[in-house]
Amino acid sequence: MKNRFTIGEMSKLHNIPVKTLRYYDEIGLFKAIEVDQNNGYRYYSTEQFEQLNTIKYLKFLGFSLKEIQKHLGSRDIQSFIKLLKHRQRITHDRIRSLNAVSSQFANRIDDLEQALAIEAVEQPFLKNITKRRIICIDEYICTEPEWELALRKLENETGITPSLFIGRVGLTVAGVNLKAGRFQEYSSVFIFWEDSLAGHNHAFVRYLAEGEYACIYYRGNHSQSSRYYDILLAFINNSGYEIAGHAIECTLIDDYITAEKHLHVTEIQIPVKLLTLQ
Image (tube, rainbow, N blue to C red; front, side, top):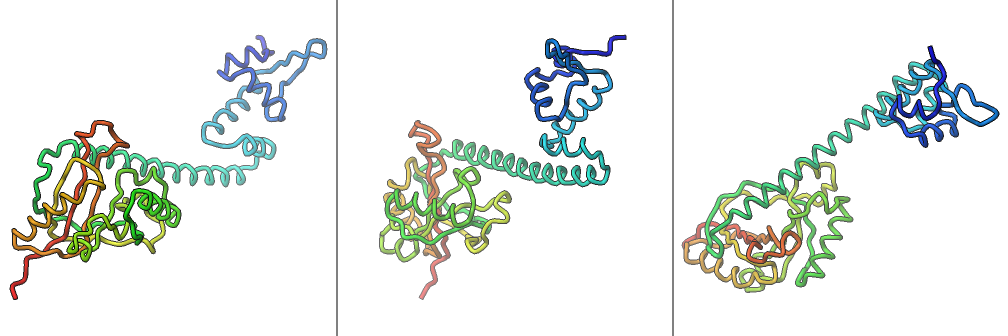
């Protein structure tokens, strides 16, 4: 039975590129059992098949070539168990990270599909909203550049990245500004909290109170909000309510998602309570 295999034959038998086998030989990870001194051809034997399978298996598990070489050099079972446990922890962390990413995909898809389904725009209404957790930074914001800078500051100081919150950003307008008609003088920027953000800087964590909110959707962005604040404040007054806190303003669909402006959606929410008779 033939027990000498060229590097090309080993490549085909084990589905490993010739270039990779040559590299393994160069670093001493997997050397040919024999080298023809006349032509430099490398030859391998069946006794090496298991070693190559082990290298492939450990690579599949995520081991580095350095880790694999160290194990094959010592073949110490306790060290190998320790190495496996280390890789297992890394794998578990990666699974948690991927689950978080999957959850973000699901949330973004749900947000966008709900936004696309909105038909009652420019019509104020009341709705009860449960308590929401946010990551927030207080900043005086009047322009889009100021908004972008505040968001970068929040991102940097909390350690979160845009991939975790895209589409989940909001601004607040203080109650005193609402009553004075200063609708585009924002007092803070925030990000809706998700489980994937757990472990980030808790100094920035706050809550949007549970309760009744007067709300309105409109086709446009933050720069077009003033008209809809007027509509919403008139609705609050005519319905026997009064402002009970800061307004929340969130763009659900904008230019960064679609160029079709007729699909853009922004929502304003203002917490309210029944007007107290004096």
